[in-house]
Length: 158
Image 1 (tube, rainbow, N blue to C red):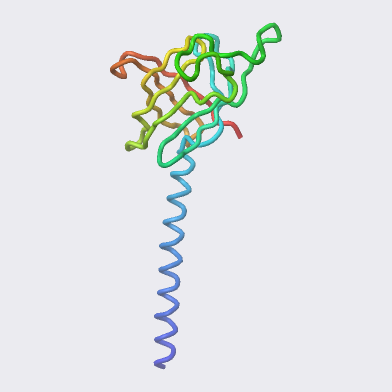
Image 2 (cartoon, rainbow, N blue to C red; image 1 turned 135 degrees about the vertical axis):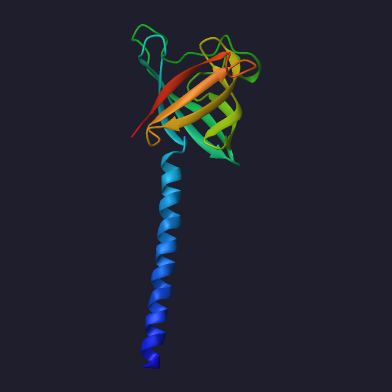
């Protein structure tokens, strides 16, 4: 009888531990799905056409984004350089350029970073957040206050 009670208690403890582990891992998977880390298709907010693929990675708790591919018309330069950029980005190839740096997780958003627009060479403050189970990324570049800027919606690549 005593062995039966010990066995039942042990089974309950194992079941409880398994349930806790399952809840902990499923919530981390949910947050991973909402993470902006991954490959994103940028969309031109003026034309609605795909512009590029940007890979967002996390390094030491900060997000950074690098252009992996450009979608260009056949008559356009297929390997453009950032001729309007300044500093270390001046005249560097756009493909492979790190355009996003320093974003840190702040509640439901990532903020505190910068983003460079290779089209005009300007660098803006940046914040971003995901929606639709992490399938859409809202990237807001701004000067000074977030009200003075624009938001693009990027789409998660599969």
